[in-house]
Length: 483
Ligand code: HEM
Ligand SMILES: *[C@@H]1O[C@H](CO)[C@@H](O)[C@H](O)[C@H]1NC(C)=O
Ligand SMILES: *[C@@H]1O[C@H](CO)[C@@H](O)[C@H](O)[C@H]1NC(C)=O
Ligand SMILES: *[C@@H]1O[C@H](CO)[C@@H](O)[C@H](O)[C@H]1NC(C)=O
Ligand SMILES: *[C@@H]1O[C@H](CO)[C@@H](O)[C@H](O)[C@H]1NC(C)=O
Image (cartoon, rainbow, N blue to C red):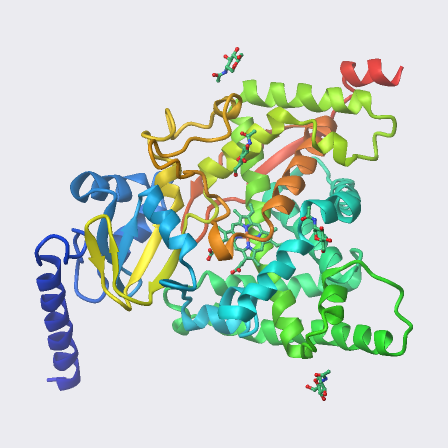
C-alpha cells in the first residue's frame, strides 16, 4: 500500500470538501456557483477537449446557462472563477496591480526570462510598459515602421511559388519585422539561424499543462539559452559602439533601451527584447492567416475588400509605396480587421491572481484564487453581437462596437486593457492591413486542402492553412489608374 498516495488523495478530498462548503455559503459571502469537477484535474480535460475542437463554445455556453456569466470551475490545477461578463472583465483588467496580478506558471516564466515585461510588477512595470507603448505608437509607425512593414511583406511574398503554407509565411514576415523593429537587422543568414532556434523556444510554451515531462520543453530551454546568447552579443556590440561614439543613430527598440538612462544590464535588455519577440509572433501571424481564411470563406467580403484596395492601388503614384494616408483610407479593411479579431480571439482571455478578497456581482472571490476573464465568451455572446458566431465584417460599418447598456462598458477587448493593454495593438492592426493590401492586390488564391480551426493550446489551423496562390493580372481598376 502506498501511504503517500493515500495521504495525497485524502488531502485532496478534504480540500474539495472545504471548497464545497465555501461554494454553499450564503449569498453575498459565497463563491460564484459552479462545479469543481474531479479531484486534482477538475474540469481541465473537458476544457482541453472542447478547445481542441472547431467549436469550443459549448464548454462556456453550458456553464453560463446553468450558473450565469460568473462561475467557478477547476482548471490547470487550481480552482478558478471564470468570467464571461464584460463588466467583471473590465474590473479585472483595470485593477491589475491593485486587486489582481498576472500570474504565469513557472515553466512559462523560465522561457520568458525574469526581466520580461509580462512578468514585471509595480513601478518598474509601469515605466517599461509606457516605454513599450510609446515605441509602438502611431507616430512611430507612421514615421518609421510603415515603410519597413510594407517592404518586408513584399520581400517575403516575392519568394512565393504556387503552393504555400500561409501560417509559415506569416510567421516569417512577423519575425523579420520584429527583428527589424527591435534591432534594425534586415533578413539574412543571421536572422534565419536565430529564427530556427527561436521556433524551438516557442514550442516550449505549448507544452503546458505538462511541461516537465516534455522533451520539447527541455529543448526549448536549451534553445532559449542560445537565442539569449545571440541577442547578448548584439547588445554588447551596440553598447560598445555607443560608448565609443561610433553608433549611427538607430531608431529601434534597442536604442531606446540603451538610451533610457536607466542603466539596464545586458541581461535585462535581452529578456525584455525576447519577450517582445514572443508576444507579437504567434498573435500577429495567426491573425494574418485567419483573416485570409475567413475572407476565403466569405467571398462577398473578399470582393469588397479587393475593390477597396484596387482603388487605392489605382490612386497611388508609386505602387510600391504605401503611405500613412493610404492606411487611413481603408474603412472596410478596418471592419475586416475588427471582425477577424473578434471571431478569432487569439488571446481568448487572461488569467489573474486575486490579491485580496474581491466582492463582485454579489459574490466573493477569496484572496489567492485565480480568475479568468474570458474575452472570447463576450465576443461570441449573442447578447452583444447579433449572430455572434458568424464572420460578418459589415457589422462594424455603422458603429465602432457595442457597449453594455447602462454602464457603457466596452465589450470588444481583443488587446486586453488597463495597465497591461497590449503595446502592439496599433502595430498589429497596421501589419494586418498592409498585408491584406499586398495579398489582395497581388494574388488570387484557393485553399489547397481542407483545414480546420482549433483553439488549444493556441488558436491555429491544423495544417497551417495551405493555399495555392496565383499572381493576379493587373486589375482593371489599377489599369485605369496607371493608364
Ligand atoms: C493580433 C495581435 C495581438 C493580440 C491579439 C494581442 C493581445 C494581447 C493581449 C490580450 C495582451 C494582454 C495580456 C494581459 O493582460 O495579461 C497583450 C499583452 C502584450 N502584448 Fe500583445 N497582442 C498582439 C500583438 C502584439 C504585438 C505585435 C506585440 C509586440 C510589439 C505585442 C506585445 C505585447 C506585450 C509586450 C504584452 C505584455 C504587456 C504587459 O504585460 O504589460 N502584442 N497582447
Ligand atoms: C509616441 O511616442 C513618442 C516617443 O517615443 C512621443 O514623442 C510621441 O509624442 C508619441 N506620439 C503619440 C501620438 O502618442
Ligand atoms: C550602471 O551599472 C553598472 C554595473 O551594473 C555600474 O558599474 C555603474 O556605476 C552604473 N551606472 C549608473 C550611472 O548607475
Ligand atoms: C449602414 O448605414 C448605411 C447608410 O446609413 C446603410 O445603407 C447600411 O445598410 C448600414 N449597414 C448596416 C450593416 O447596418
Ligand atoms: C474597431 O475596434 C476599435 C476598438 O478596438 C474601435 O475603436 C474602432 O472604431 C473599430 N473600427 C471599426 C471600423 O469599427
